[in-house]
Image (cartoon, rainbow, N blue to C red; front, side, top):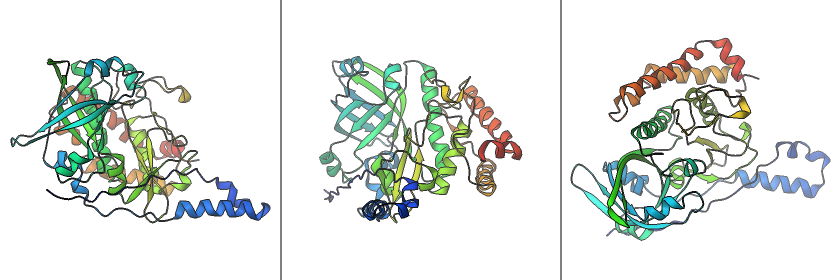
Length: 370
């Protein structure tokens, strides 16, 4: 048995430092000036990260050993009945198997999660909490023990197609930048512990934990409100801005931190922006997706920019990078056996409409420049 030293990574919560505060400090009292300077120093203070091999997490084990087949058992009668009003954790078991005949099984805690999907979907997204002791026995890092499981929304074939399109959006963003969530697809059998003969199979995918994302990028997850692009790394903000426009996703908001994460870098400099949750995008076109009234959106595929580039050079640099990815074969979903030919054609058509817009330099500058 491998002994793993347990690290406790503190999560710090920062309030956004008002930008105008320091600029006006000459007209303020010395006490207030010291308060602003203290906040600024706290934000820029380097963080200390635990030294560990990222390949030792439960997510990496699932991915590395290709555990595509999963059996999840719990009291689904109660979980599904109370999914809208309760975040109760249910005791259950999870079994992983691969084509080599390898497997492992452990007890887990399961809870429904999400805001809108748990209200409109027959199967809510889930959070799987692996016991730290079980991870220790497997020789794995005890951190990163809580994984999000993105599930089929409804019990029909089209629901699996919708789910896999969202999975491939994560994979597309992985091609753009490593500053993105890693994902892993599985074919999962849900077993009701009240009646083990009651089971149903669907596709799903795991998302690496927030802790693993942060440690992989040598950073720390922080909560920010009223965020502006000024405190974000240029690349992460620009990548997010153009990618969300490409997939037609309006279900994110920088200032309130909706469907984005902020990572404080180890060197204490600007924060990394990481987007997630793409089911409302035009590229996915999920049946439960809602129009965004703030933009006067008339149909779910309609694109709107949700931010600006500082100058033409930055905009063109990002456009050139996206064009480079297209030339290199920005179509990883083409190899997906689960997606039907018709869904692949829809994805190609929608991405193609984005690249057609990129060729119109004047139009892009009108959209994305002040």
